[in-house]
Length: 84
Image 1: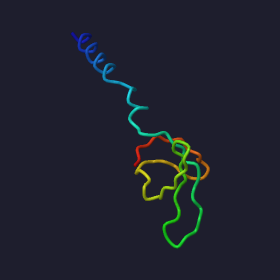
Image 2: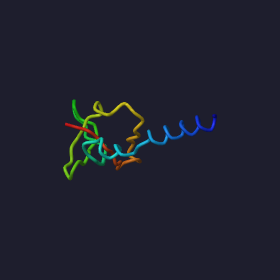
Image 3: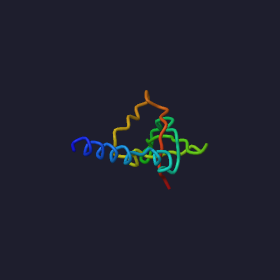
């Protein structure tokens, strides 16, 4: 009886795992290329990001709340993201 229960639990575990949504769940692949080192009165600072061969600047305020290490030694950094 214990073997049957173990078998059912293992089948449920392996059938529930899926990697199919990893690449399809994001809108774009991008590369965070560099830190914006310009000095301004307000509004400067952030990062340059390349999305589909276009370069954009995004402010530090728009960083996701996670453990991304965007120190200059870790750039360029490949990321997947949703944006608008």
